[in-house]
Image 1 (cartoon, helix red, strand yellow):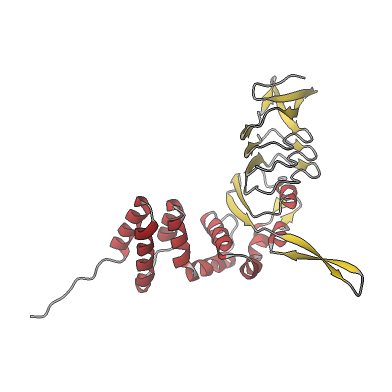
Image 2 (cartoon, rainbow, N blue to C red):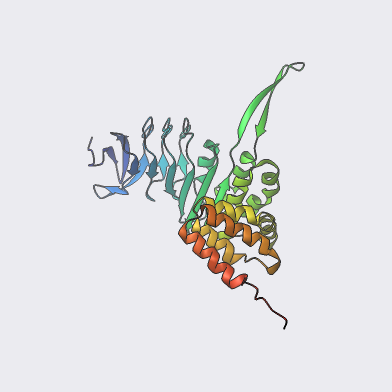
Length: 294
């Protein structure tokens, strides 16, 4: 079988290419879109099995990934693919417990995202680009078997709202309105850190965001403004901090909140965040001039 310089072996299948094996243990993998002038459309079974790949990028030409394609790829953190990929083999992500982000180039409304999400139970950030522009967060969930001894029945309990969030599809198309309706479940079951990311993702990239859903997210943001701003400062996330301050500026009666944000920036912020907040205060909370009576 022919082999590429990057360690892939492949087969020619009429008018397309099937990649069959990857040699070595590269940390970052870029699957080529074509070989020998033919498009790469299939990735074979067990292709990345047991590899130490941390980032894998799959081109838009690929439409099929074989069974157990990423089996025990334990270091995998980030995966990118296109909406053209719609055929995922069984057990593709078995043993992959460190995936935290997916990036999907949406060339149309339908994709294989539903199949991928159904196999990954960990917390995930999904970035949709192309004809759809959205940032979606999916909570972690796990299932627990609980025995009902008198009835001799094993019952399955689902913990977390992750499974509920993953059931937001109409066929292979994602249903944004259904996703937003699940926010009440996230409020009851998920951590403030997760809620911060979910709310920021939907408000900063409001694809198909209804007015009602926007109000719910904004209410949460306003109620937790101080903590969210300080989180962004501590995490050195200047871009997100700037978005928050400029999109949802504090009113005059929120001066105490601004002072706490300023103190946090002085204590552990970067030079950029300190400068940003001081300039923000100069504009929105100018120092009050003293007046003297003679």
